[in-house]
Image (cartoon, rainbow, N blue to C red; front, side, top):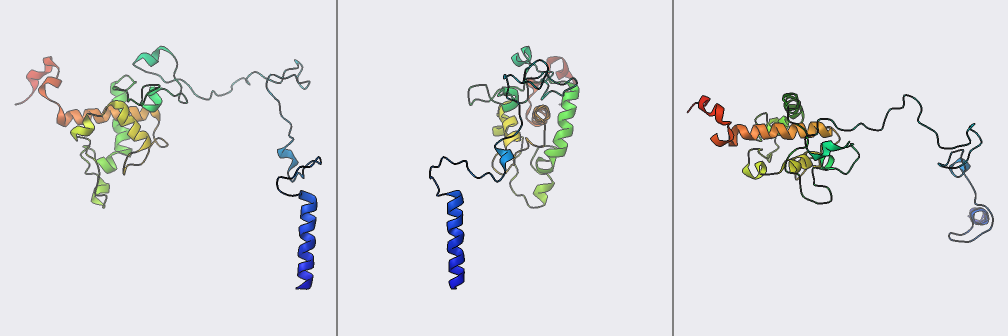
Length: 219
């Protein structure tokens, strides 16, 4: 025990002598276990550098460089007047009106036949297991024990703005988890458009049918 205490005391003195006390001031440089973390070769932007013939540290992009992102296509509202990217705080990415907590009323993408088909395909993959292909909340997960699954035909949900549906798909709500990591922004809006079609299939009135087609309806 005597030798242990002597060795332990010597070790403490050695460590304190080399590293000092916490918060202590010293003019000596600190011990660097990994010096490359403090000093490493790098180029600082907008500073002279003699390594390159033109003397500039900031360089032009290498030919063929892949851009960080490309702007969205087929935007149908005012956002289409300028390029909008996936990293922007814009309604197309958040579902909210910029600078507010209010949800946008309508989706930003033009609703075309391919867009709806894409929404149906994505819905069948990510949404139908819980909400069912009909959107009534009687999917396979409910049969396996998940007792509470929302029906998309609930009038309360049908009154949600498009932006709120997009937000819920992205971030989840209550028992539903977020799907932003699995579904792209455009596909989430396509799902919203398809959900609207499902809701119309049950909740629409005669007034929602174009006048020229009403005569074809069966009474």
